[in-house]
Length: 119
Image 1 (cartoon, rainbow, N blue to C red):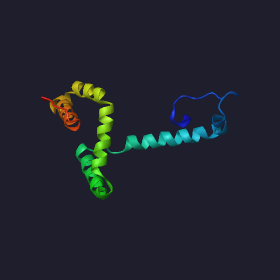
Image 2: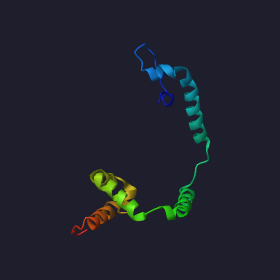
Image 3: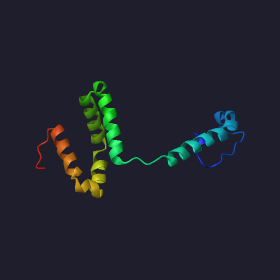
Image 4: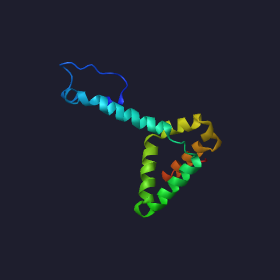
């Protein structure tokens, strides 16, 4: 964990034993982390279209391994757990507003919860 921080840690006698054991290796790991992020910064940016194409290909290659009903149920469980926060964020987001995502999520929630609604 210390390899991922920019600040230097002062070791004392009270420092945890794991920090004392690996203190000599921290600089090596910090360099590895720095090199990793440097490599990412140097990568050519990927367009949304290219990313969507790649994700669609990955999705198709794993179609037989995915139970969509289970996945949708798990997504809905997550969304219902954080429903108020998601609705609030969608209401504040101009892109979500233009796509009426708040209304769509409310309609999905109503349908899945068998609620009568005038949405």
